[in-house]
Image (cartoon, rainbow, N blue to C red; front, side, top):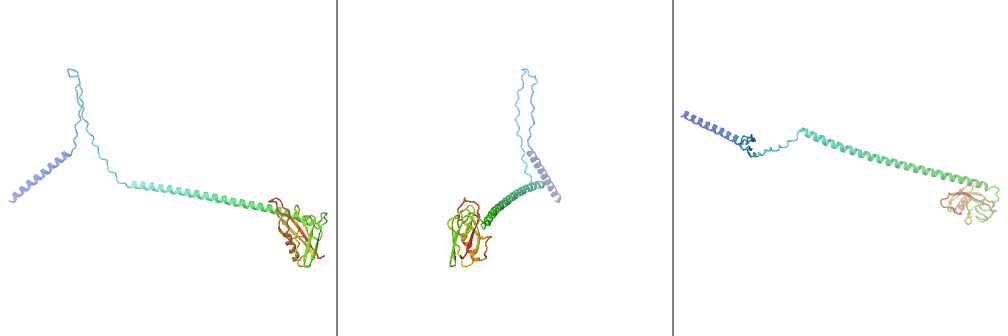
Length: 276
């Protein structure tokens, strides 16, 4: 019985092996592509009686089997390195362009700063030059006024006479003739080249019985106004009341005008305070 079962199993195993072999052969044969054999071209060699060529039908073309395009390969390590290098170069180029832009802006700001400093320096030099020229003109005018004032106490044929009287504590004077010329007498004396007195000189007001001469230096502008008045050389009294009264009276004097922009002129007004 045992030997019989073994034979049966052997037969079954053999059949299975044959079945598997058959299936393998079947699928391999069916999957193989059919490749038709190439057909030759028949050539007529002249063996026919009528000398004609044998007609033949050209073989049909076999469609070419196109293989599918290969799938794109995954990026390799070299591809990643190249990509990183390109990005790094792009960043470096951008950084270099930014650096150049900032450098150009800084150069422009520095240029503008230097130009502003040069402009300020030029303005400063121009102001210094103008101030020096003005000081020179004023000094020349003062020197001229000093020269005229020095001659006011000497002999001068062009004299202006006046009279002064004192009532109580007030001294009054009267100026006659050409007020803008040097002269002698008890009344105020004016020395101012090129200008004429407008109206009369204001009488100084003082409360003292002292006597003396007060010389006031005046600076007159183009409008004829006295813009500066102060005690000058030739004053022979130290009484501040007389000096203050003379300076205040001199500030109220007005003279003829000149062209706008003309330089100021310097002169003197001499006040002789006396109780006689």
